[in-house]
Image 1 (cartoon, rainbow, N blue to C red):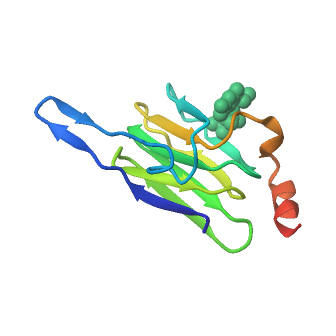
Image 2: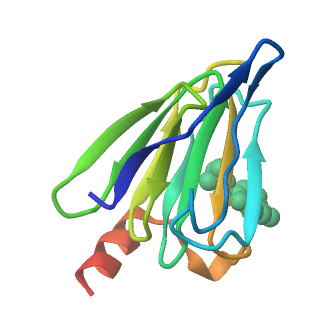
Image 3: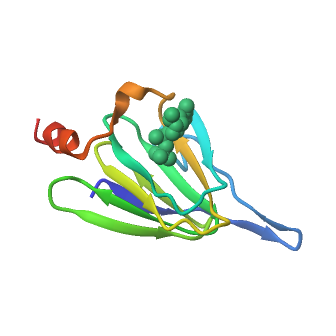
Length: 132
Ligand code: TYD
C-alpha cells in the first residue's frame, strides 16, 4: 500500500503542546501547499485519486476514518484521531474520508500547488489509469 503512518514528535510542557513539521524532514517532499479541513459534518469527502500529488495528513483535533484503495489488491481503513500520528499518502491511491467527529480538524501538507488536472474523480477512470 502506498501510504504509511508516521509519528509526529510532540513537545509538551506545563503550558501545553506543540509539534512542528519541517519540509523534507517530516515530509518526504518539499511542501508547496498547506490546507485545512474544518467545520465538517457527516458528509464524506475525497472520492478521488491524485496522479502526482503526495500528501501528509494530520488530524489535529477529533477523528476521521480514511479509506485508501490502490485499485489493485489493497483497501485500508485508517483511523486518525491524534496529532501524534500523520498519514503519508503517495500518489495513485483512491481516498475517501468518512465519519468525521464534529470537532474534527485536518491539516494537510501537499507536494504541489492546487491542480485540478492532477485529480481523478471517477473510480472507473481510476481503475483504467492504474492499469495503464
Ligand atoms: P476537494 O479536493 O475536492 O475536497 P475533498 O477531497 O476534501 O472532498 O476540494 C474541494 C474544493 O476546494 C474544490 O472546488 C477545489 C478546492 N480546493 C482548492 O481550491 N485548493 C485546494 O488546495 C484544495 C485542496 C481544494
